[in-house]
Image 1 (spheres, rainbow, N blue to C red):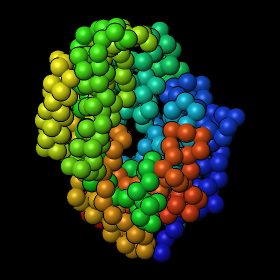
Image 2 (tube, rainbow, N blue to C red):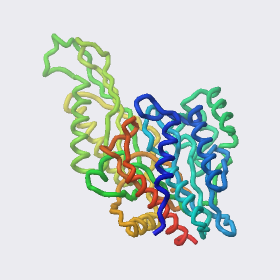
Image 3 (cartoon, rainbow, N blue to C red):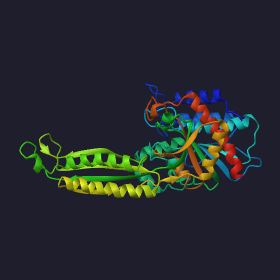
Image 4 (cartoon, one colour):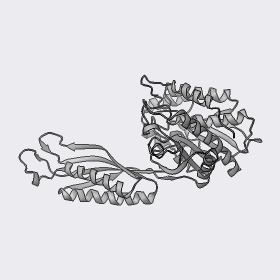
Length: 409
């Protein structure tokens, strides 16, 4: 059975990890900074050395291309991103780009001309240094000029970074594609489900939706010494009760869905004043709109119950949601057939983090799969996927692409 060159793949992982390396073994390559540009030049060199075609689109997305004969207008894409979070790990995103590149190199090494053109991508700014999923949003036609107003860097810095990468605000909007037959992405799990179950592969069947609410409980300020406990309208009591009740309710009724209160602030904010107002940030995630709708109804009911219990009022304001992305059955099937042929154990699961695949799913049949993360650690210098699991994931990418060329030819 055809296999990737594992020595070459593992060498690439080590080489790339030295670009933007941190003292504690991590990697810092925020999008379109000097170290990210160095990584992008490294990728371009690797593509040239492999004898593959290289391209960069108006959004700065980089491609390694293995053409069919004759070259077809439609193609199958795979990849991820090379940028990282500050002081992150060497596998998040990068492994997905490297295994896609290695799959194409392996076919090239064996003089295999695919039935359909194959393309390995490095998307620009998946990790939100500028705006998050930026390159794949551009490809999917989901980027607009108004989005630049929400950039995490100021206008002058945005212009500098774009110019350094050879792109502009206007060129970003020209990257929309209509030539994609299918998309597949490998990613590290960033969790413990595969490791705990002793599985090789997680086939993602949906990327969760995310809904966020700014919640405010309002009571009454009072002297913390003289106001009797049973007469207090303590806004923090209501918030604390909600956090614990929401945790229990979601665990009992919506597993594997999740909720989180990640910010909380009490006012006036003094040792000797009963909190009159507490603001908190509520987020919840699940794999379908129906499940999200049900969670939202229950969480809003809990907010009202907790407020009433402590004689409080409560208000909430929603932020724009992230819509769940369902994966394509044909692409998932190709991953699963390839895994079975390679003797890799697998099961379907949700992705609770965002990925470029959620944008690609809007324009083409798309799916992704996970390889294990040791102890679930990610966005951390200690992030680790074993060499063996990296190689398994790369061989699965190779054979998934071959399955897809048959399915979509």
